[in-house]
Length: 190
Image (cartoon, rainbow, N blue to C red):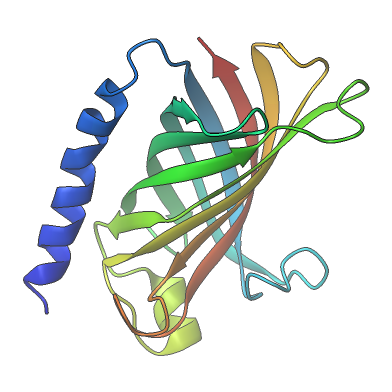
């Protein structure tokens, strides 16, 4: 299993450019964001957040691959993050994402909701995952959940609120448990 995990991660990363090339006229975006680690589980993070002395800053690039319905798009995204505080390592994460674009208040505040499922690779074992769960792994599942907010529908700039979740996927990819970061950032579409 230890040989399979790096192979799966490498295959997922290698596949992103091929998937992105399938739709040459798609929209790109770049995101800069940062956040703080929490002791809270992913479902507690909005209401019972207990913060860790662990932070990251990072940047990501994404591309809209397909419009699945008038309200739903498929995207591919990759991120590079620098962890600080209790942790001192780099993280690379990539995921396909589904994004919902239609909300009743979009005339007032243009809003989208995105969720992805991919892989995250940390250059060292994350300390807060080891403290919380007793163990960790450098390769884990990456589950980004985000909301974007913009002043108008076709704005090139958006604010991003994201939960950055790393997980062993109930023991399928790594040990049970993982980590959560509450993050905020800016996104530019080009």
